[in-house]
Image (tube, rainbow, N blue to C red; front, side, top):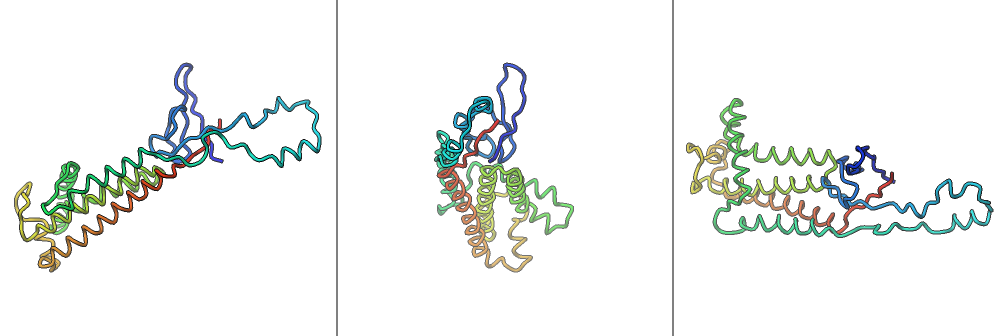
Length: 246
């Protein structure tokens, strides 16, 4: 049985517990961990007699056998619960990516953040040669969400891992639009100069197949997004419950 580590607080302050899944501190009144969204369930202490209550009481073989045969009392609220918050989050994440299915190039709100990391990647990797510098924008767009996903996974924060996985997939959709634009050059360039993917695809001899490359990247991003949404919905339909024990 998983147990929470009780965190001692000063008199009058709110008592807290450490989540057994990710180790984050939570107020004892919370039903779900704020970090990994694991559900908390109170232990049925009433079903367990205290040692003081049984001290001095006559013990018989019959009563011991009856107690052994009696089924364990299930705590109130035990078992899986549906997390509507996760279901709503999954719907929002899918809806955010719908503009990418249109005919015109999509640029959603989160792509402003992606663009900042993209431009930063060129600067960070500019010392590793011209090819890596040109690819640095795409590399950084993917490295940041992947690093965040690994961080949350190591912390056992499943919800954080799943959202970061979605972010990596969404970045791939954004990158696919950029690749598809390589020969048309309709997208405005922030700093001007040479289109990243004209240079990169030309170097590897795939400039004429840029639309096919863009389609492959788009399908990969879509698969990652659907997988992350599946994980969120799965956990939402069967939220984990962890008993609290002092």
